[in-house]
Image (cartoon, rainbow, N blue to C red; front, top):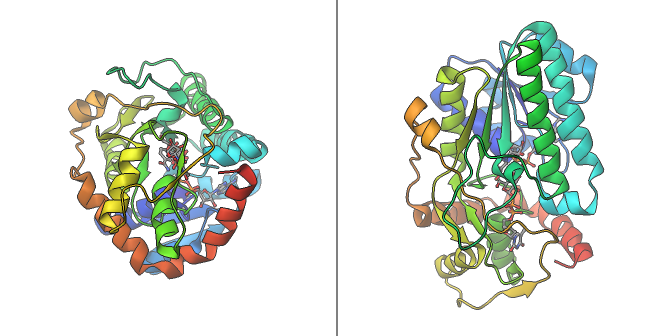
Amino acid sequence: MLVTGGAGFIGANFVHYTIRNHPEYEVRVLDALTYAGDQTTLRPVADRTEFVHGDICDASVVDQLVAEADLVVHFAAESHVDNSLHDPEPFIRSNIIGTYTLLEAVRRHSGRFHHISTDEVFGDLPLDATDKFDEGTPYDPSSPYSASKASSDMLVRAWARSFGVAATLSNCANNYGSYQHVEKFIPRQITNLLVGERPKLYGAGENVREWTHVDDHNAAVHLILSKGRIGETYLIGSGDERSNKEILELILELMGQAPDSYDHVADRPGHDLRYSNDTTKIRTELGWQPKYGDFRAGLAATIDWYRQNEWWWKPQKEATEAKYRVLGR
Ligand code: NAD
Ligand code: DAU
């Protein structure tokens, strides 16, 4: 199994999950170690994985690794919306050209390909609605990040239909858990409190996300690998929708702080209001269901992880906050 982006948050958790639960796989990781990649995350599984430092846009490296793999699970991407608003170029390159490069290699070598994507490709839903995205919802991305992911999804669908590439796709909601970069909402607020900074809420904090534990996401990916239908897309999400303000107040409560001890900062331009996935297809067809039903407990465990693993996140913290200062957030 070739895992692209296996030194990032979800990819590394996927490698850990695979080694724990699917020892039948030999795992090789391809990762460019961008600012978001950290090889130390793979240290606990280093004796069971092979690491290749390389770029998914490098056709010769990709061709050789794909030729040697039975299947490719493709996580590698530029993943942070705020960064894409500041400088879209790496998103176009890694997310679109990188996916194209992988697809061409998979086409040449007749491999199996699973593409990891996001609910952000569908745009957003009104705050006061109860409707959800499903596998047939038309694409309507809002940010350079989501537009680049939408483009990559379209490439995968086209390569499946026109060239017969044995591909599946999944679009998951927001993930949380250990080893998530400190630029993302939940780790940023936890680590701000741990270093004595006030948390930062964009705008009024009314935007809603469907928080899904990273292991539930990765369990769903394994089900798709073993039982998913080729050419199909599966939506993944916990069903647990919460506003950013609600999440922040829960973090403050769990960390023993006053509920109003945070700052409102400038809103994200084009900020998507709400995401919500209808997961009927993956539940009924593949029997997936989230194990981390208790979000409060999952968040408390995540806070504990950041408390105990300062060595992992502290080196990234100052540079990340410096980027946010440039953005005024
Ligand atoms: P991340 O930013 O934590 O990790 C991305 C990894 O990809 C890093 O290790 C980085 O070094 C690597 N990478 C980036 N460009 C590369 C390139 N050109 N060549 C090789 N490696 C490269 O991202 P994440 O949050 O773990 O997201 C992983 C995937 O899941 C992405 O495709 C993302 O769109 C998708 N996704 C993320 C979420 C979420 O909540 N984080 C939700 C749904 C889907
Ligand atoms: O929905 C899936 C997507 O979830 C993935 O495709 C992306 O890769 C992933 O980054 C995530 O995107 P979001 O933009 O939803 O996540 P982020 O952690 O950046 O922000 C979550 C919400 O919190 C969002 O409404 C913006 C807000 N926010 C974020 C930060 C960093 C704040 O209020 N304050 C902050 O400091």
